[in-house]
Image (cartoon, rainbow, N blue to C red; front, side, top):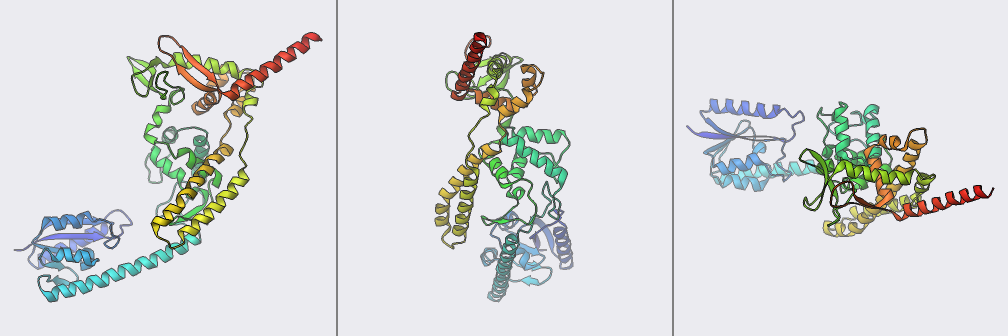
Length: 458
């Protein structure tokens, strides 16, 4: 009795449950029983096209197994490309199909029939691909939604899911202001917020969500931007700023930012950032190399915070530090629009992909630079936030403790150009004010002394 290997394939499994595969297998087994065939190995390619050029693991395993015969539901489940047919012909085995009988690939006539069927199947697949590309392009130009699964922040019809959209907006603000992807994902999980698939958030999935141009009302198709028909959750500048902020973030390393001085303080010997760690029951800062320095975190934190508060309590210091020169946002946006127009022209030029990629490289580099320049227009100035927190009756240390971690770190980076714990015991640390902080302190101290002199003269 001939033993057949089953080959089962479905191009698109919308439910993810493999119902089409189950039906094919059932009918193939019924065919084998009616025709006195044994069923051996079963090879499956679920949710896989035969004409896209994507590798089919099940098909490759079938060929490697060198079966005695092959049984499939229809020839186009097995073969839709002529090159695949030639590989099956090389096996020199019969091919049985539930819907079209036997393909005798051992005879010239059988091979001719199979090649004709495969050629027409390939033609049909290519024509379908042309129609789908035209349809997708038309939908993109109209800005219509293209998602299969509901994206977080939106309802299936493209309208905003306001509770989710509010969370997304807050995440943009927090991360642009310095919060980590890991910390934001952890907070969402703690608050019971899940993905639309009911899963917990990870830094990688949150990063993908926030970097999606969909949130800025942009419909992207083959690298060309179209205005979306759905409402934006955030404006273009905010989305671009987030992309600029996270372009170099490695989510799996975000946990290292938990310490106040993680990524802020540097090693006295090699200049690399310090990270938070543990040793003998103590929380420590150590050089990222792991060998140059290891200091008790609380002692170093206290020393640096004391230096920071000594600057921040100088009357007018926070206001002086919050004065920043903003880039000409309107000019940058106009330049970005022009660069986007030129990108579209290149993408639609019909030139060789290699030439297009070469032409786009400087344009994309400038676009990234513009987005980074615009980050400053989106970010909350940490000194303005300190002034808000400090403009009450609380003690400075209490106001400091009430700030979120990323704001504290931003304040330290604005105040100090160098934070360098020293070898030895205790909280010995070198801190050097930034030129702006030093200038502000000198100017304000001079103003205070002058006011004191004027008061004495009266």
